Image (cartoon, rainbow, N blue to C red):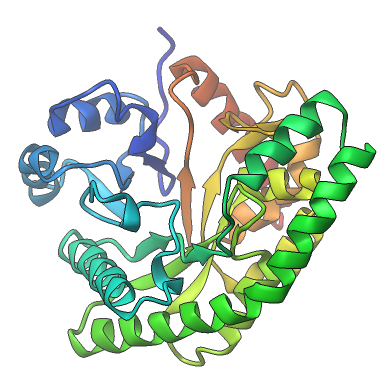
Length: 320
């Protein structure tokens, strides 16, 4: 096995090996072997796992960059990562979603993390229209009549309802921030770009929500791979808009998308040594940098990918 270099400020999401482990300590130790001294605790980390992770945090064996709402793991699908969450019209459900995000922030604060990654919500559809669009995309292509027809239907509903849900999300975030600030938590919320076309926010929706929350600790959490999927499906111009919003970005999820399949190692699995370059400056400037990779990514892939990426970042740095 190749020697893994220390990864410095870069963090690594526990989504990579969460399904392999039941004991939190073993999960963290495997990530440390990759050279990471910081992790993002994702939303599948259970309270039981935390019993062996927390002593490692307290002893300084691992740093926590961020936690992913809802944290710790909440088995109720109403508050899962693919739900309406902060956009619920139902007041009781929205109140619960707000409480869960405040709880995530409390854990983040306790662990010395500076951010909570949050999926804010979606425009609800009666079925998984994104899944159907992906199937047509693969079988007939984005330019096919079938894709264009269904895409237009999706867009019409999305556009007519997104303003309403963006306002719901903004109101929820305002309440969350009031509570976080009043408790003295030094934690910011990063609203994350998503991988399904009916989910919120797009980059422009994120900008609108954040601009409407002046002075609140809410920023963009830019998931590069998800943005690539949305760009390919036709929802927004990912690289252009993300680079324009660079000052809004609190953190990044670093991974590359092949076709519509995400969470691959940048440069390595695509075999394209240039396409991902358009995101390098965003990563360089992002305060929090987290690799979010799938289990199929092997340690040697991760090492080579990181080396390529950091070399490209070094080339951007002013010389002298």
